[in-house]
Amino acid sequence: MKFVIVGTNHAGIAAANTLLDNYGEGNEVVMIDRNTNLSYLGCGTALWVGRQIDSYKGLFYTKPEDFEAKGARISLETSVDRVDFDKKVVYATSKDGKAIEESYDKLILAEGSAPIAPNLPGKDLEGIHFLKLFQEGMAVDQELAKNEVKTVAVVGAGYIGVEIAEAAARRGKKVLLFDAADTCLASYYDEEFSSLMDKNLKEHGIETHYGEFAQEYLGENGRVCGLKTDKGQYDADAIINCIGFRPNSVLGGDHLERFANGAYLVSRGFQTSDPDVFAIGDCATNYSNALQATTYIALASNAVRSGIVGAHNAAGTAIEGAGVQGSNGIDIFDLKLVSTGLSVKAAEKFGVNVKYVDYEDTQLPGFMPAEKNATVKIRIVYEKGTNRIVGTQLASHYDMHELIHMFSLAIQEGITMDKLQLLDIFFLPHYNQPYNYVTMAALTADKN
Ligand SMILES: Cc1cc2nc3c(=O)[nH]c(=O)nc-3n(C[C@H](O)[C@H](O)[C@H](O)COP(=O)(O)OP(=O)(O)OC[C@H]3O[C@@H](n4cnc5c(N)ncnc54)[C@H](O)[C@@H]3O)c2cc1C
Ligand SMILES: NC(=O)c1ccc[n+]([C@@H]2O[C@H](COP(=O)([O-])OP(=O)(O)OC[C@H]3O[C@@H](n4cnc5c(N)ncnc54)[C@H](O)[C@@H]3O)[C@@H](O)[C@H]2O)c1
Image (cartoon, rainbow, N blue to C red; front, side, top):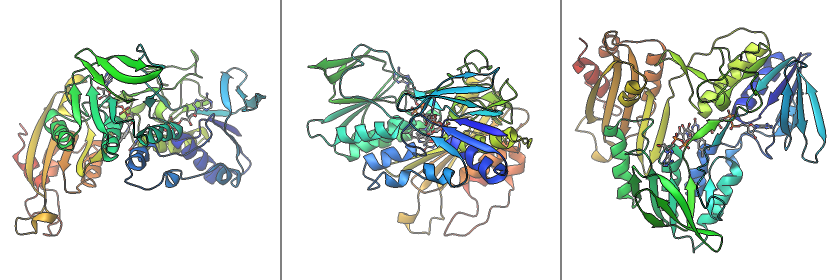
């Protein structure tokens, strides 16, 4: 069989490796991508722009030769222009303008996502940035290296916006952080948690502007010099837009069924409405175990797993994805927030009837050295009636992030609060308390 993979970043790479490692014998794998590089871990952009790591070099984890060594054909700087789904042919253009045709038996679309670009007056001014590709990270890094860039405006206080705001502050810039919502990280945390991050950002000199909508980029001699919102006008020497991604699901045209936001609608095996076409990563939907419904969550973690599952199914091994919880984490100026599943706000938005329990305690017993100890705040969200756990949020300066994986599994497996309250959690003063905050939250939760 001949497999053609369009898009060779995290999802496409996972699919290619799955095919080459398990079905390489007697099969052909063709990989196409329009970028000049592959496997760039965008999550590292803020780390190297903020000089928390000294180079971006380690942020690429593979290279074209690795796939050629396994027998694949890979073409970078090659853009797929269209797909003829009846003839099962992919049409592309190489970097030197050569027309390329690739027939396929099975097509895997890994077209990813693209930053949402506010179509505002002044959008073509110099000094306005997005943050998706490695090249865009480089451009922001060069911007922050300029002494004349003293004030940076970041539009969007989601994950990328908060991370790049920290990076710019670490580079000594004055940072204005804007968001339409009334807090940062509004899509992932309830107010009681996002407010901790807001306080942390302010304590590190970041000026937050919430409930403000960007209206115009202000410029002078072709270069951005400010931002106008519905609430005011602000000087800024550079602007970084981080207002979310939309699925990049162009090639499916009107042949493939879509989700509400345009992502390719796929089965639990990542098969599209065309049995010979699979879609994985940011261009496709996923299954939410918390919602028990189809959803869209653009994360590298989901991209990789969907690439593995989609490739097995494309090769004829019928397996279902485990579904996702949208587990995610962020670590800003040493404050750690992790979440999985639904916040109370998200549950209400999706019409899931929930209760929640909050608990706060130090990670370690009080007799342990204070510098090793810190308060942890936990919120467990569970469905009214069934007491099925549907979400958890944690915040602390203590590194408790691994705990969220347990809650991710609990949501995936439909674990209820009564199962959690007497769970065997070990006690060792180096790591936790005999009555730790998970047990205490579950014991004190109202389960009626
Ligand atoms: C700054 C930043 C930080 C992030 N941090 C995290 C994090 O900490 N944790 C996390 O889980 N996720 C994080 N993400 C999200 C994560 O990067 C994405 O979810 C992931 O990249 C999705 O992988 P993908 O392969 O589906 O899509 P993409 O990475 O978007 O790759 C799609 C590929 O398809 C190619 N392509 C598209 N159309 C065509 C075409 N017509 N012809 C040829 N090639 C095409 C593109 O060139 C691209 O290489 C971050 C993203 C950014 C931008
Ligand atoms: N640590 C991580 O897991 C991590 C890190 C970075 C990125 N990512 C993922 O990458 C993707 C993109 O991240 P992102 O930060 O761009 O998106 P996001 O959805 O996390 O945040 C976008 C933010 O922009 C705000 N916004 C939207 N329109 C606006 C407007 N017109 N004016 C002002 N604010 C506006 C939203 O309220 C939201 O807070 C997400 O799927 C995210 O989960 C994950």
